[in-house]
Length: 145
Image (cartoon, rainbow, N blue to C red; front, side, top):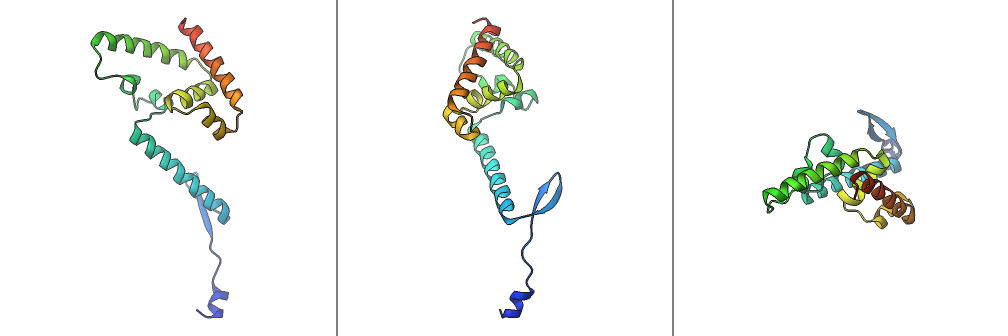
């Protein structure tokens, strides 16, 4: 390639999709966007392989609570009791506000530790711990445990 070819070459342009349309952006934003997109797909694939289900998926009938939490080796009495208990717990969880539901989902359904959640969200560990205690106390009162 000679020097005149370098001068005629246009700089590369970068585009990212937003609401079904492509918008031009900088190389840095383009790289971060696609790195985050790939990370999200990786986590979804990993969750699918491990059988992890989001709490929010239960509301859209993708999965029932019974499918997620049932034990195939239990007798019918135990299964009925578990089903009744699960319905009661899910009903109690449905009364929580969105932030409380999110916390329960991350800690109990996704299996994240409080420390891991603290690092991911930049919320102090003690704040997460206190919120968890508050939410569990609220659920205990509703369930009268």
